[in-house]
Image (cartoon, rainbow, N blue to C red):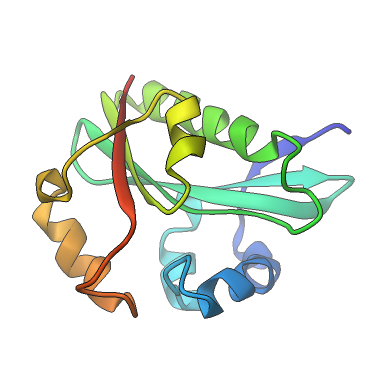
Length: 153
């Protein structure tokens, strides 16, 4: 199973939205409309197997030294095959090449990120603009069960 990692293009948005829809509906991933995805299209990395979209995530830059992994999704049937791990490692390489020093994640999958070297941090240490730009749009706000983690690069 050869996985190809490519940067997303605008033409990928419909299939990205289709893949992420069940997780958005369940409240696991924050909904982003097509315009939001388009605005941030350069932050997305896709995982393809035989040109089939099997996963993606975004690297969002908060500050000159802090990034965030967002919207990690792996297609049902492809989970448990290390695709998510390889995708995160690819995005961490990109973060390092940009000069970021730290990458954070808000997740329900704490042990997954801890296996990749992330450590839990208090939510109070998150950038304030993260809370008001993203978290406030979540259907779980202000009662959030996600764990915040960070990895130093």
